[in-house]
Length: 244
Image (cartoon, rainbow, N blue to C red; front, side):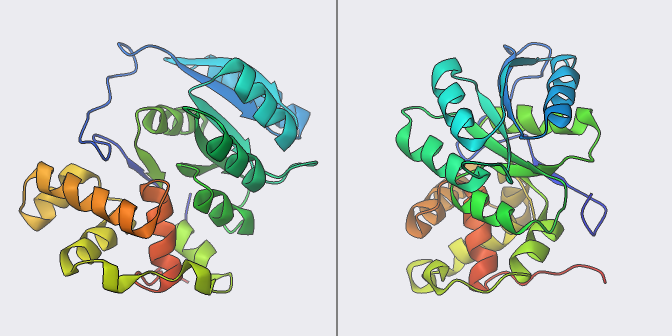
């Protein structure tokens, strides 16, 4: 997957401390697949539909259609390609999340883990990203995790992507606004740890971590914890570490 060989799904608890139901007992997660390549799009739809707990509602061939179909079909998750005609995945994600009441979660999907568009989509509010070369069961797992209100992080790959593009000063971390403990929590979030894992690492209660995570998101103006991690990398608070 990433340069470290591992992808980290932040499962087990969302920012509210809730626990996702097992796929076999939870209602089916509904998905819209958006990709401009017909073969890829059809293949993903067919393979995802065969996975437990996944229902594919439809497909979109570009960013404009992705937003229109998401508004009409109301899926739980949009699997969004980043490089599409008419409107790319960044702008489609931004419009969908900003202009839609109770918007779906967005997982961006790309061929390369150094895709420069991915961090833009995450900053626009996507809950995570996956690589097209992953086994479909892993993509389905990411869809379920995100639908449960959690995040899908690949810290090494994400750090590599951010390091490969110029620092946007507008995204600089307002570090004075964060307490020392909140910075510590943000660093642990950037490693892909879930709320229970952060609570264990810092030897504090889950309620305390939920409060810290909520404060971090609010102070950074982050759409979700994945966006907060992007800001942490871009600001230099978290330094990318990867082999090679």
